[in-house]
Amino acid sequence: MTDPRQLPLADYRPRSRLVVPETVVERPRYPAVDAHNHLGRWLTGDWCVGDVGALLALLDEVGVEAIVNLDGRWGEELDANLDRYDRAHPGRFATFCHVDFGLARERGFEPKLVASLRESHARGARGLKVWKDLGLGFRDPAGQLLMPDDPRLGPLFHEAGELGLPVLIHTADPVAFFDPVDERNERLEELGVHPEWSFHAPGFPSFDELMCSLESLVAAHPGTTFLTAHAGCHAEDLAHVDRMLTAYPNLHTDFSARIAELGRQPRAAAALFARHPDRILFGTDCYPPHAATYRRYFRFLETADEHFPYGEGEVPAQGRWAISALALDDAVLRAVYRDNPRRVLNLE
Image 1 (cartoon, rainbow, N blue to C red):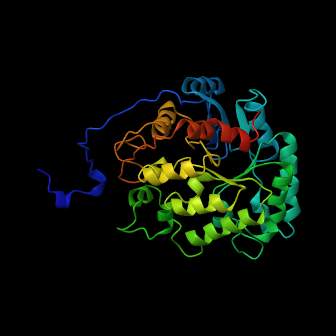
Image 2 (cartoon, rainbow, N blue to C red):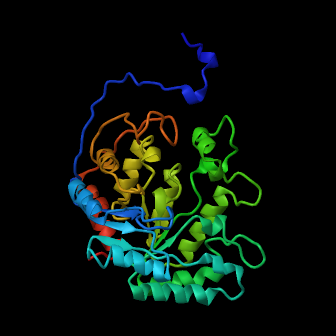
Image 3 (cartoon, one colour):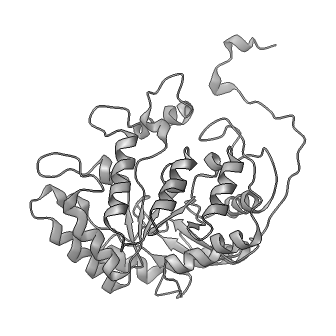
């Protein structure tokens, strides 16, 4: 018999003895749009999807009629993404561009960002993707971190509104990534595998500072449509997300890669969907897309199942807990799966 006092946490594999229903949802109740995914070369160095035809077959199998590709970048790389996806398969893909915030190292960078966005819009970009390195990575000529609400970025975000381009923004990361990496950190095992994901170090803003900057940005540009990634970038505090959605009519959110957080507070999560049925978009952030992940999301949204895994693997990747489903009603499901993404993202 193993002495439990000596068992390393990494070797702990608890097996739930609950007897609970397991509902398989092969396809969503309504055709879905995956509003948050990565299909390009930005994050992986090579095309995330090798066979576009196989991807389309997968999407047809699981009832996803369109998918947003957030990897467009700019210039020739944007054209390569548009050629591969949007132009080759009209109506099935919507590629977002980026701008090069690295230009902020140079004085007078502001008009260059605006010009880049205009050019990407003319090429066919369907929105602007802003990643967490705005606030955590890019610095200005004085060496200061460039925050989302920096006034020098105002013309860029104003122009996005003028062009009708939604801005999908990922600010910060899970709150635990800003906490000390110690015995009290609920993402300790994850940060042990990925120590570079910790932002608890000198030189980084706090999580709260980043959230304040995000709110200031959204408030300053009421004519621009913002879509916060990952349940308002604050899935651990749904009262905060609710307040933001209530306060700012130009703000929407997806819940990609956050069913692990939402599913351990299912009543609060279901209430958030019910309070803002027209402001929440379906998205997975699972790349390359996988049928099992889509079906887990469908189960999470549609059934009343309790205490099931939020991901693959014997040890949960984000934390040692299970999730329960939301059992959303038909009207909310239709809005979240299809109507909201098509409206907010200007999909035909």
